[in-house]
Amino acid sequence: MIPTIAEAAKLIAAKKLSPVELTQACLSRMHAMDDTLHAFILPTEERALSEARAAEAEIMKSGPRGPMHGIPIGLKDIVDTAGLETTCQSRLLAGNVPDKDAMCAVKLASAGSVLMGKLTTHEFADGGPSFDLPKPPSRNPWNPDHFTAGSSSGTGAAVAAGMILCGIGTDTGGSIRGPAALCGIAGIKPTYGLVSRAGVAPAAFSLDHIGPMAWTSEDCAIMLQALAGHDPADPASANQPIPDYTALLGTGLKGVKVGVIRHFHETDAPVAPATQAGIDNAMAVLRDLGAIVSDVTVSPLQDWHACGSLISMAERATAYEEWARTRLSEFSERVQRRLALGAMVSAVDYLQAVRRRRELRAELKAAMAGLDVVITAGAYGEAAKMDAIPRWDVFAAPSFTIPFNVTGYPAIAVCTGFGPLGLPVSMQVVGKPFQEATVFRVADAFEKATEFRNKRPAMVGG
Amino acid sequence: MPPKLTDESLDYLLDAAGLVLTAEQKADLATTHEALTAMKARVRKPRGRMAEPAHTFGYTAEDLA
Image 1 (cartoon, helix red, strand yellow):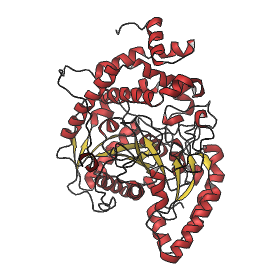
Image 2: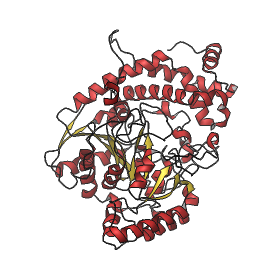
Image 3: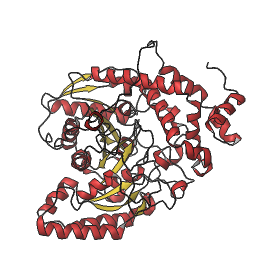
């Protein structure tokens, strides 16, 4: 059995589980499955065992620093790591060894976590899957013929397969929540600015978020506690008090007000029947737990998608302009084409999108007045096959996740069941700014009232 | 229907961006024109000249000292 962070932390604190044993178990799953899943770009086995032994010694002597002490983690390979190659899955950064850790890596190390390695990503967190890069794309543990979504693809696969208990994802339009949805785990994009982006490769400055991915929303709360906080090195870092993100877990949902943006997933962009059934069932579960559920209407999903996509295209082209001009052919074919989209977005197009963003943010704020959270789909359905992802996916269908990059509101993807192919389906729970504790309260209550957290992919032992 | 994206206008945009694409890449990029134009239309509303974008300055204590 693969423990959650919450379970492992209790056992470690009681000295019933050694971080070394826990790390060795994760390593043995990595050895057994990663040739198939390609979740790791750079495993750090010796470092992991060394850190686990150090954690064990410290815990035996003076007890754990906190619940992350001795927990095996992974970092998406767009996160700088001092002394460890950080390639962003790109030929352009082959051999790049940063001299400084990203702030999120510093914080997780300070919490005593054990680094298992760097995790597969889409190139510079864009596009994917790409088959023309030095390392292959990650595959879905529920069925390796199927996609993980991205760009935090390795993190999604590694958590679902129990190679790590949690990992860092980044999310510009859904890159935490998409892989969480398709890999059947939990992943939260926190409020914009809550977790420092310092030392993490940019995708689109005003949409980029760093956040936890783990088996449960409770574990995401534990991990977020270690990550959140003001950092002057990130120009968009929020200077907000950091609450106890686990404080509301287990307090029930009596009187909690839940809005459902039903038109997003029913009429604007209808989801697969299994996703619809999962959301309908989730609403029934939340009602049974005492929540008050009502429908919410905002602008069509396509408006949010257009706004976020135009901003993303322009900001991404800005961030990578120098390399696009001088080394374009070194990017994957998919990213070359996506970067070229920036040439077709004018400054006026961009600023019209930013003006629209202000309106959409005000709209969501008004819609959520009197509510605690809103809910919509996390993805269309089960994961598609690896070779069925359209090159221009940005134009194929609107994203359910990007509205909350546009607004910066916290949003978690959680598993709501399984579809006819046996792959996971999901929903998102979205909170008000800096109200992550409420998001975790609802997501955790749903997970604990259902059985979906008891099932792992068959290749892990079910 | 959006205005047609001619080869010349696409070349101009790519030149201005400093990008060198293959003929096949350019042809593929041109296929996005209609969908991209629809996106651009979606963010435009009759909002008048006073509507500001979402940017705000975040002054820190150090800025104000």
